[in-house]
Image 1 (cartoon, rainbow, N blue to C red):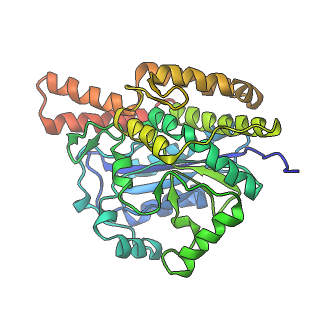
Image 2 (image 1 turned 180 degrees about the horizontal axis):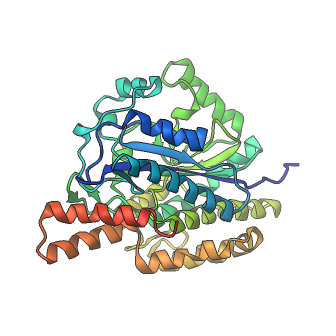
Length: 377
């Protein structure tokens, strides 16, 4: 009999570092900046592929309130250190006008290998994401849940979109980050496996062939973590507002709990082919919460608001159990006011309507992102 999962939670966020005056991304990080962050946060802060990015990770948390407190502490610390250097952080998955050509990658062996192997593809990776880990200690259960939870990943992406702009123009997509990420190998929806052993055998083939060093270079939208006994959700954009990040993490955790409740009754979530899930993934990438997703059972398009209410109804018992009903129901507020992507487009259009130049309108987006990254912290 499988022991019940702990459902602990951990969240990783990747911030972009901007110059306060120009609002552009920095090309090269001050060498002492990371060290100053690590003096306070130790291993909870690490460099990212680009020097204009910095990654943080919470400790293992038992409650959503713990996770929120951790994220707030991490954002405060990194923001404070950045300010000492005339810089600021933004929690968004793309910068409104920065260009990849002006960026330098971090001098670290892992990143040197990626840069060598991926060439121009990786030079376009001017993107950031949020990863949510949930403790599922049994190996085979992690694989089983990975196959079932894939269905809801596009729904979670739609709630987090924060990357509508790319190199100074509105892409028309709510998550252009996903479009950039798709160019890498071993991304997208996961394969389905019958056991952890089967999954590991497939990874071992790639390792033996010299394609990858280990499973950390499997970059699916969801994957069994190599470092922790967790199921790591990776599809989401960065949430500019901390409350939105906690909401999405709460829904993901509760959805996994709901699937475990089904399993205890010898039931399971119906599996759908990736060709169907990928269609919803594209719609979330393109439209976010605006145009609805496909209800595979009905075979028709359903407004996102309807799907959200169905999701909340399915996980309300789990949210009550974990004491995070308010965090889960915050999704309705996201739906009402829009995601970061909506706010970015709104700021730009309002600035342009007021007669502001393109350059200043884009800078206004950065100012808004700086402010809302620290809102409520």
